[in-house]
Image (cartoon, rainbow, N blue to C red):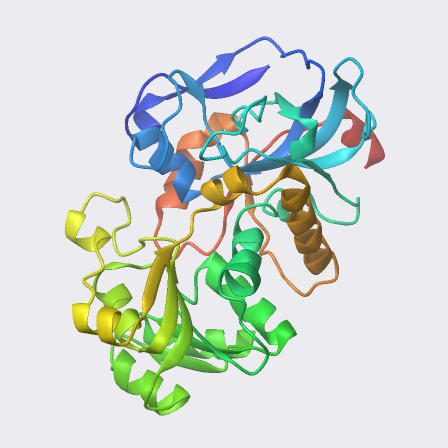
Length: 355
């Protein structure tokens, strides 16, 4: 089988090579998956650069998040799933590590996965949507409903509203009756976010975030916020919180390649943390998978699957690339505001016949 392998830490286009590897054999509790589509996330590239929250052993197959495929074989005494069944494989490495087999890198034609990390997918859900189900939509759901437990009618302040997660947060909030204040950095994004269902939009390019939040949510500020920018913007969000408010930080987009130490900090005001008891904490999906039971993880994924299948959450169509064109795919993934998620896709004889 073909696999996209990084021999060492470095820039992805420098260290990745297309290799031929033997098809793995599933053991007890495992399934062999023929991969149909798998996305390229920014975090996949940060892993290869050695700038993420964990580092795999090299050489490593790229892709450490999610994919969709069909079960080709089951390990001995493995029950609960069927050969030929279409599934999403959650490849997010759990931190702290959970004992037992997980999922290998997804940028290959076949992989072995722990059946506890597989979610059956209805055939009417496209490969493009299915292969993006387990990271961004799940992150949006967990942030809004688990981490912050935002209630109907409450204001939720978020940065990078035009990002994939930001857009999903808007859709989910609208469904749940939550009002959103959405920060964007470009004026031309304002109308787009409003059309998507964002209640209020603040353009940090020419508006004062603190002043606008006070005008919208009241002088005290918003009680709940999520941030994936960090740096100066993240600090402003913390200042815009009401006393006793909560801010959950899940990313640091203020530095695209995570190379600027200053952009990876959030300068908090000690007085607001102490006297106004504001809370700032992080969220990392990998760590959530490390603490959630397999049953809880699949329950949350099933909820996301239903939201996407019912068209409450809309996942934009990805742009397909064969493995051979990985340099083009990575270039698209690295383009700011590219809007389209690059996907590695694999032809499947079964599906060719179906067409």
